[in-house]
Length: 208
Image (cartoon, rainbow, N blue to C red; front, side):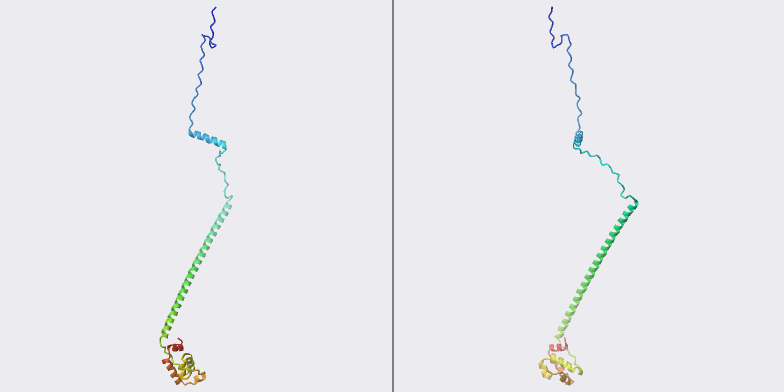
């Protein structure tokens, strides 16, 4: 009896070998754009930290004025405030004009005062110059009348020198003695004083 052949691998020689299944091919994944990756990362990060904010919704605001009367009252207040502002501006302008006017008046008064002081100073200077000129000249005295003998002799006692008074005999004489002097004698005394007295005595008698 022939010997039985041994099976190799569990299969007989006449059996067909099983075909091995081919591995399943994986399709390539589509490449992602950088923007898509950024969007995904942004969306991922937003979802993680909860920072997704919904777009603002427009609120239905109520009208500013609830009625026409309220609007008219508001406009009246604005008009009143504007008028008050105009009145304030006008008042400030009036104050400024008054100050400018007062300043001009003060400057004019100061100018007039300075001019008056200059005029008085010039007049005083001219008068002093005239006086000095007159003192340098021999004045012409007016001869007193007969009724003025006593007063003129008393005045000569104040102006003439003691030597002159002694020369004519009226030094220290009282009013009664001076009144009794004859007008002719007085005229001689006065003429002598006019011609020979120093300038200082003549100007003192005249009052220059």
